[in-house]
Image 1: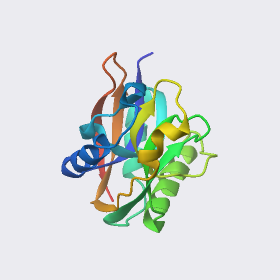
Image 2: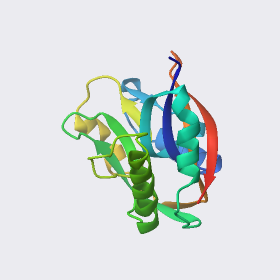
Image 3: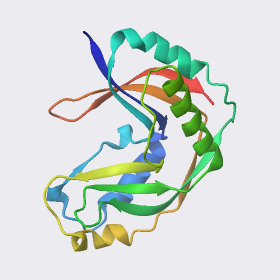
Length: 183
């Protein structure tokens, strides 16, 4: 059976992601312990689908295209740096401020794919963020003080979301946009 590793995401303009990464790379961090993402791959994941049988792809695209949500452009605000699992740091990311239209989009996608038996229903609370790096070697939270104190306040507008294939390679993931959906 052919499968594709899929997720649904909001894109980030390369100019903004590049700007964020320049600031991020100027921080005093234990870089040898981090695996950063490529700025051109920065995105806000709405739903990770994982390994999906190829035969489900047409139904998945149809279901996402049939969403009855018309919210138009969404303005998102980056409001703080955040470390997932502060007791044993694992992921450095930028939190996105709560936005009712973003939550509405997330809920609509989650519900539609569940109704169509194309994905499980999320049990975790939606925590929108932009991943910058994964901690690859054991590290103490104190090593990330510069990141914790980093203040970045940026906003960006999204007008569509994407269904993306993620192919894992030894050099990192390769993302391929399979379909784009207007908001």
